[in-house]
Each structure stands twice: as C-alpha cells, then as structure tokens.
Length: 110
Image (cartoon, rainbow, N blue to C red; front, side):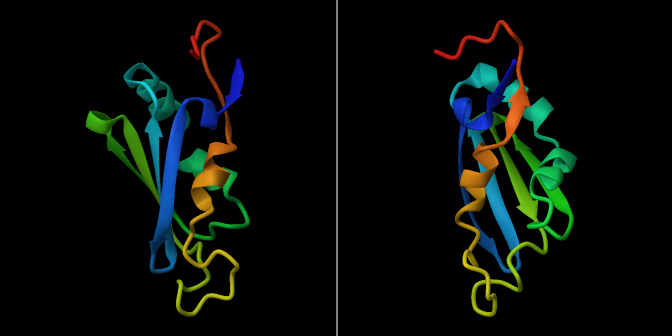
C-alpha cells in the first residue's frame, strides 16, 4: 500500500545557514521502523530534486521515533542573503510530508 508520509508522522523544519534542517517524527513507536526504512537520504534528495542542490545527511533518533535530515545547498545562501521565498526553509517540512511511501498492507492507521 502507498500512503502519504503525513499519515504516519509530523515534521518541523528550519534553516541552518544555506542548509535546511527537517525532523520527521513518527506518531507511533511501531511506525518508526517504517519511516527509518523508507526515508533514506537518497530518497529525500530525490524528493527535493531541483530544490536541494547538495548532499542530504540523515540522523536517526530512535529514542524519540524521529529522523533528522540536513539538506545542504537548499536555501540560496541562507536567510539574510537568499532571494528565495522560503529563505528559512519553513515549508520543507510540509513538502516532506507530501512524499508517498510504501507501507505493509496490514498497517493499521488508527
């Protein structure tokens, strides 16, 4: 089954200079392994093709059921010099949650 990431997690993003930082947090502990397996750095980089021009780093935080991504060369130089509409990367989280991922057909979403 294929679903939007937003059904399993919430996210928060912001800027780190020219890099966008995005945390993705599972709503339930049992959903964290699904996120961990589906959200690779390569998959996130592909999802943000044309927006993220650099490397994507992934950090695992299993104790809080979360993954953190740093998307380098994404914000057009950063908040004080960028001409992008979202120079602080605040919309990256919403865009991340639009990603569709494969989940087991037996997954209970309630």
